[in-house]
Structure formats: C-alpha cells, structure tokens
Length: 360
Image 1 (cartoon, rainbow, N blue to C red):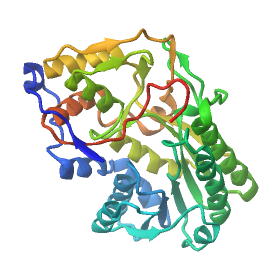
Image 2 (spheres, rainbow, N blue to C red; image 1 turned 120 degrees about the vertical axis):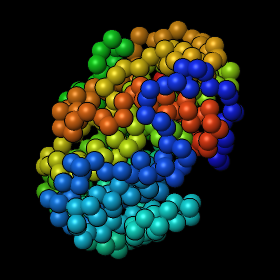
Image 3 (cartoon, helix red, strand yellow; image 1 turned 180 degrees about the vertical axis):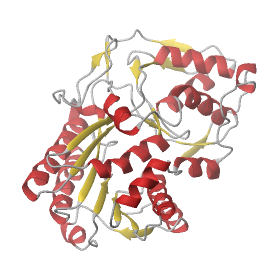
Image 4 (spheres, helix red, strand yellow; image 1 turned 120 degrees about the horizontal axis):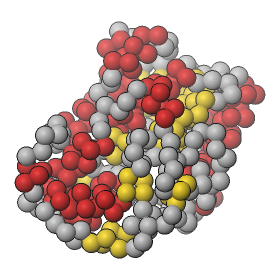
C-alpha cells in the first residue's frame, strides 16, 4: 500500500541548503533514477545484443530497464530491452511500455515458461524473494535457487549480471571498512542463505556452461520513496523512536546502483566476477537521526545502544571500476528530507535493515 508522510515545516537549514534541489515529484524522480551516465552510453556502443531483465517489476527494475533503454538509444544501438516478470502490478508494465521496453509476462518458477523466453545476449537477473521468507522459507528457496538453475541453463553462454546482497556476509566491526568480495560468506537466516545458494548455482553453471557472470552484491539502495534513509527519516518526522542497536549502515542512490548494475555486463567473467555496490561511508544510525532532526526542526527519539558490529560492505572495488557516485550521501540525506517535508508519496516497504536475526 502506498502512503504519504506527515507534512512538517522545514528547518532553516533545509530551506537554505546549498545542495542540488531534490526531484520535484515522481516524474522527475523517475527521470533522474533512469538517467544514464556517459560511461554507460559508451558501454552500449561496445556491447552487442539485446538485454533481458528478469524480475523487472520490483522497486529497481523499471528504472533500471528505462536507463538501459535510454543508454542504448543514446549509443545508437538497435538492441532491444525486454523486461520479464509476472507483473501482478499492471502499473509497472504500463510504465515500461511507455518508455519503449518490451514486456514478457512469465512465472519464472515454470521451467517451460523460462525455456520459451526469447534468445538474448545479455541477462540482468533481479528475480528473488526477501520479505515473507520467515513465513514461507520454501518459497524463498525456490525463487532464489531453483529459478537461477532454470535461467542459467536456458541462457548458457550469455552475459549475466546476477543481483545479490551484502547479507551474504557476516556482520563486521563498526570500526572496519566492511566486508570485501573475497571474505568468506557467513549468512544468517533463510533469506541470506538462499542468496548464497543463488550465487553458488550461477557460479556452477558459469563454469559448466562457460557463461560469463557478474555477481552484484548490493546494499542498500535509496530512491526517496523507500530505503534506509527514508525509514529513519520517517520515524524522526513522526516523533517515533529510532532503534540504534543496529547502529551502522551503507547506502547508495538507486540511480547509481542502476548504473553500476548495467556496467557490470562488461565485467561478467568465468569464473564469476564479484563486486560490492554501496556508498563509501559507514553511516551512524544515531547521527542520521540527529541530522534529520536538525533538517526537520525536531528532536529525534533514539533508543538502544549500538552493537559493536553491523552489516557493512567495502565498495572500493566498484569505485575503482566505475568511479565516484554521481549523488553524494550528504545530497541524498537532504533529498530525502525535502521529499518527506513536502509530503510526497512513499512506498510502504521498509528495508528492515535493523534486523540481526535474518528473519524477513
């Protein structure tokens, strides 16, 4: 269900901010989320073939698909962008059609349906299940391990970017830069374990079928309507307590996350190339609550004592490959505050980043 935030009077700091203004509404937000960088356009000049995005109806899929279409158009490429999902929300399918993306209605748990998908040279695999895992773990395991097997066999030899998560790592000391790509995987809970399963399945078929794969470990994307920053800011704005026990997190503007995902197509390899994607800073939940409090002109209510560790990822490999982010964390914080103060629409999809037990 979609909700609106309570409207608050912005502080003088927010009114006089020198940061670039936040998107004025959802039309502008979607345009910015899907705006390709020049390097992405250049990649599509080099990268042959069509792109199929599997699981394209989620929070990131539509804007990533639109970014791919815009980048291909700017590159002069004649390739197709295809988006496959069940499309239980017809609005997502309508949005994709509006922006020149072909859609395919498919239940990826049906092997025959996967085999009937068109031949393409490039796959972005975004399908999976997180929320509801605690109640129906068997469904999550099927989506996160069986579907990858169907797709990996169907698209033998194609370039594949496989979405994963930083949840596959163990928590790291808050004073550390976070997990690096070569760290052992020590997942907690069914969701994180099944995500390791997804990675292992794609790795197996990458080597067996000589399919170049890039494993894309993301945490946490923010698009102003959802994300860790939105979760914290909403609570501050509403005068609700912010639990600082899970005291630290990484975040990234979803537009930058989209861009890096597409550019991973060029880095797919056998055995798979693995990359952490997030922002460069370790952010304190307590500090974020106070920053939003200052921007809203409200005193935040912060509870709990910070645990000594948190789910953190070191994204230096992605920065070395793709360069600095186009939207800084400071800018993103101000954008979230502007968005909420102006009462714009949000999604009722909290990240649950606060959880230590891996039950989503």
